Image (cartoon, rainbow, N blue to C red; front, side, top):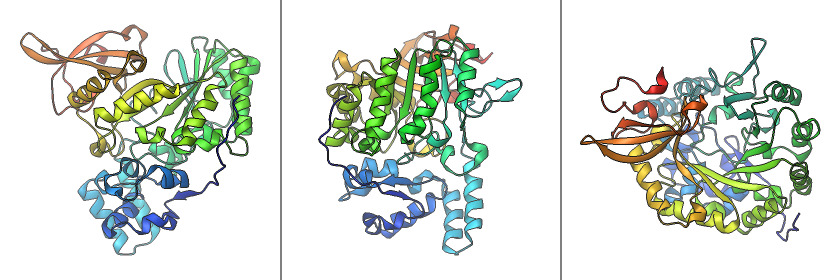
Length: 434
């Protein structure tokens, strides 16, 4: 485990409740200031002093990708919904009235896409195991109760429903035994992904409570442990100078030493998140434990819809020893109309960036849609029978027999998601819809 020479940084969190204490916030134009206050009632706001002070260019916040990534924007709501909220806000109505209107809007925003509630939650003796998801044969997702928050909320996040304070919308499990029992009963599972929120926001002591039983009891056929996290981008001091940073690194050492593959599935949305000395040191320290870092993010309009951003990001990841892993299509949830990029444009951006990096960065896959039937790759734009088509394939699927199977859809420049596409060649349905 490598030593660190980074100076400690005191942590300060900002939420909707104390957003006005951010010095730079008060300096924003009144229109932007008011819009953030209003939209944050629907799409929750959270950030910290590292994000505010070291990642955002406050000389031009309106043009800054990290500002748009973290601070709610007016365009995230429809004109109708924004006007309704604004009227309540300006009238000085009680908070309960404003919250009720926010809840109404949230329920319209597809809070759990791709069948997460209906299809992904496993059952034991007829009872749903809240806090687990099992969509793909090999991989189980686990949502530890204490990890259902983040150091900052990405405005595009498809897990935004975890953060709005509605228990019926939240996945969470505080019982490590429930996970162990499920893994023992399902030997087909080889990978456990701890997710959230962000599991690495938990203290090392609490994280150990969930991980240690796997190391000691080795349930089923588990070979890999993954942590889905944005902590590297939003608070790298977690791995460096926080009071239990060394404890976390010791836990990583133990996971690798016990013979498990440890993968930190890190979300980097823009290359700026890879440029501070703290994040570089944190990446180095994680890799020194024998873990690897795989990087993924969605393609999001206003933030990274430029092939040059992805080229630089992938090259920086490789230079730090991390592995470019996925470019996702923004999911059909939350403020999707504000962030979505048409599929044909996503394919162009990916291809242009991909063509400019070396083979070491071409480990990345995309653009990929995590849709109800599985992860669908936009594999190309081609012409067959004199007509333009999208070439698509599953790189992961509910039914393993679909994996790597090519299929085609009519070319449509307005399509932003799988449900917008029609089968090619006059077919009435796609093969997987049966």
